[in-house]
Length: 92
Image 1 (cartoon, rainbow, N blue to C red):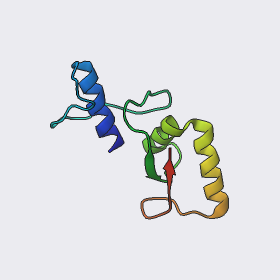
Image 2: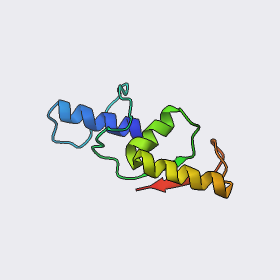
Image 3: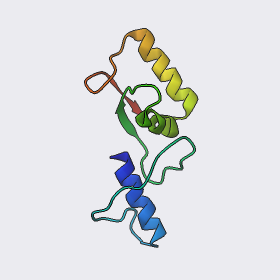
């Protein structure tokens, strides 16, 4: 969902639209990694992801690498569950 919304915001800006996001069907051509400047998303509710995954890269891009790794360190020590049916976190 984050990629879709951010891609719609990127397309709106590129097309000079007055809208924050450009509605309609489109293929998101966006790979979010650390250093990405978020245009519209200001919060992220996400599961704990596996190392070296693209979803972990997105979390690091949003929260910052050190902050994300600190959250993961806490999760491992506290015995949180990972994967799709595990615990999640709200990142703001």
